[in-house]
Image (cartoon, rainbow, N blue to C red):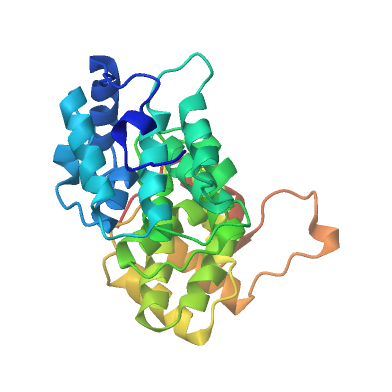
Length: 314
């Protein structure tokens, strides 16, 4: 392509093209469900200096599209950044060969592969196609861009129901997460997957974050949906290798803190004290002899109580 700054050349397939009503409504719906009512495309436009992104995209007419093209071209940003945004826009264009206009543009302007891959990823993310988005966003060639926003989207988007996807992104990309809100959102997903893994992850955060996440873990476990899952996680929680400091936090949170009214708070405290006192020793000869009771605590009935939700909250 000789000149990507020429609208007629970029949109040579149809210089009179305008977004259809269905496409516009779909984009607006996706924006309404996005973090802060902001698409990743909106964030990209703002990096180009176009602060009124919501008014610019999606363009409602051919003239709006032309105006958007002009503002992109006049941005002082590097060429590859401006070309990447145009590539994203071209992916909106229906074509017999899916997105061939975008692909042809990328080849014509020699758009670097990592830019194209990233734009493909956030395009699918904006369209709530999360698994497909991660196929691109976890590519090793990429430098993490908008990592916290991507993580928060994967953890909280109302249409994102696969709890493994945030973990895939985190362990593949290793994004730096510093926002307390996003840390908490990711931690909730991690705790659902593994109480033990969440426990050790919280330790690595250090400082006040360690305690707040530790308390969040207790809350997420005891306040979870009643049933077998809560029973299993509750037992896993009270058997974790707490440090002396964590023991104090556990007692304080469930005994007199914000967690005292949680389901089974008093029973969790009693169970934890039984575990740490090691007053009950189950040997191989005890196996198969039925439930054991120690310090007045029947471990079988405890698990069943957590499952049924029959332990009264104190």
